[in-house]
Length: 177
Image (tube, rainbow, N blue to C red):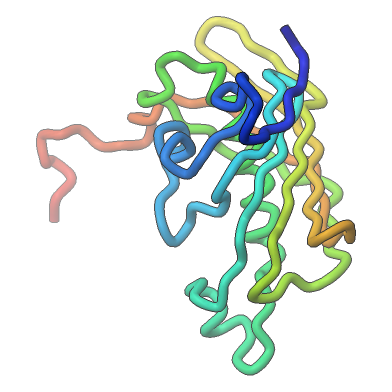
């Protein structure tokens, strides 16, 4: 069933179509201050996702970007797009606690308008390519970020699912020192 179901209070399929912060925390490995999605409004398996990020003055990056003129860094908007896409893709992975989705590319990133405290960033991400073979899953996604109806950013992001133990040293402590 590839039907998209917008989340409403009365929708019997709300639990399947949308995700609250508690469900997002079970899917994504990110935590504060780098968890950049607060809610999923709509999810169409292996196809698209719509998520939101509530931008507040309490975000730690506003202290330095920029004092007196707080603007959300564009790279974090792209990261939010990637996290929304990651939430979409990781819902398809049964052993996701042992996996992490890594960036492999960012193409055609454009920043059209600043995002400021008080804005609600709506992230719309669509899968444009999906490849899954034993031991490897990769995807390419087109993402757009909106504040209200105004498009503020866009990017094509590529990612690959990797074993979360990759890159970690042995647990024997041989690397200390």
